[in-house]
Amino acid sequence: MASGGYPGKYETGKPIQGIETANQSEGVTVFHAGTKRTSQGQILTAGGRVLNVTGVAGDFREALQRAYAGIEQIQFEGAHYRTDIGAKAL
Image (cartoon, rainbow, N blue to C red; front, top):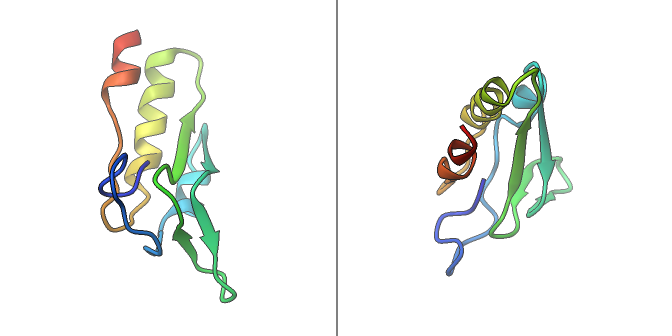
């Protein structure tokens, strides 16, 4: 998941919600890239490439579905992600 405007100019400091929910989904793991945690524990965007959401399953199609289901659980202003890369493997 990337910040709005990436790979060009993008803003940081956008609150992120739903990471914990996504991580609790079967076969989903969220890796942090461009994030930071405030002293109050809030996770914010801190870069262009913000999160990597992965899915693991018995076959590629199900793994891809799990990854995108995890993405749907996460929200931050301007968030976007690609859907073409995994689709090429199908």
